[in-house]
Length: 259
Ligand code: NAD
Image 1 (cartoon, rainbow, N blue to C red):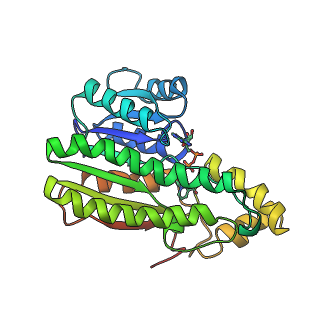
Image 2: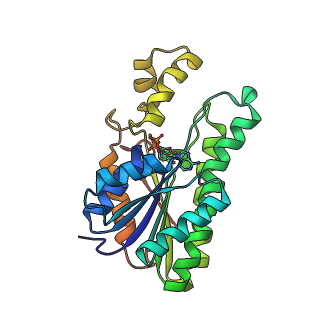
């Protein structure tokens, strides 16, 4: 058990990648707050992942809402007594060419990824600085390193997370806090399933062509990255105790990019 008695908040953990990270953290002995938009869904996920009801809780948290982030984080610290790990994972995707991108959609994507990362980081750091320890993990993307058409705010936000992680790594060092970024390639979650028909329509391709010629084109083996692959990286960053590994990003993408 690599995370015995650690306390973690995972945002966007009612589904997809966040849920798998929560499951892996529980397996490794952590106590986990499943933070997501809808409190009842987050609580149902917590109950499913931890039938004992003692090590996982659901927390209603829209990561773009300052008051909800503050209240949710305080609730976790009150319930479990500390906070060791934040996984800032909640995310959304909207695809369109820049020339047609609605400003409201641009703002929604930027807010979810960047405001969400900032607000959850700030709330977590207050507790982590008191404890003199902590690990913050941002869910970046291959799009933290490279660009794709149709994804302007997503690519901009994911690049921005690398900058935020580096600042938190520098400021957090004297308080024992590390910050790192996981950069997955395509993983078959609802976020990606939704994009396949959207991109097919926008690019004039079949759905099978979107998968083969767009999403997995540059991988070494034409394979999707799995939920388990990403969760394992999160366990690795969370359990790595020294500041030898801070301000870093790890790409888990079947070799899509090797930067
Ligand atoms: P998903 O759609 O399956 O799950 C996202 C979760 O985030 C959902 O439970 C949703 O309710 C929650 N969420 C959305 N907005 C929120 C908000 N404002 N506050 C709190 N929760 C919110 O998506 P996923 O594929 O699991 O993506 C998770 C993260 O991984 C995202 O940051 C995404 O950008 C990143 N990522 C995904 C892939 C991929 O291929 N799936 C690749 C690279 C990076």
